[in-house]
Image (cartoon, rainbow, N blue to C red):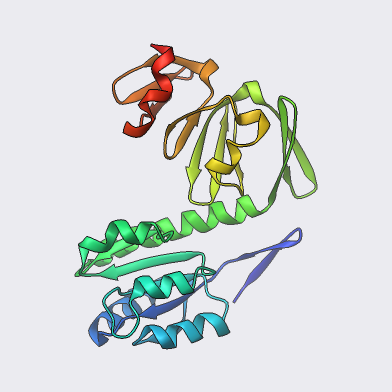
Length: 245
């Protein structure tokens, strides 16, 4: 496995996978699909969750491909015990568990039978998530009044709060979008909004908060910012915008 050093952090070119499914044909399908991607390495193929839990404890694993309906321990139960694995993909024929699975930091939910094309879209999501995760890990967040610093390696980028348009949640990371740039920080949107400088931002969606100074119009389902960027409005967050109308 090739490893490239970046400052004190490491970016892994190959992502290590564990496959867990009690159906042999389904195990073979994922194994076959994964073999077509050079950057995905199979560490272990398991027919039950117990063996998979041992595999995740004894190996550095980046991705879990999990069935849900398995004897003794379900895929959902396994995910709860293996939260240290950054990426979880459920591959199942039970659509009714989709909502519950995403509460366990699931990146994708494949419904059997799925095509190679659908699996390829999943792989692209994995790559994008790992790219963002690696970049965000390289940042340290520091704050002072009306200014914050994003540290990349040994370089600090000074950002004025007034330049921030909106914040976008991406699992445990937050994308900070300014007038001229984008920055990822290893902090959830909820945690970031508790910081002193960001308490004036308006949470308008579970995944978005906006700088109120940049709101130009409010529509039924979206906010338009001065940059002409549309931001969706979540149903449970509409009351946060009442005093703008």
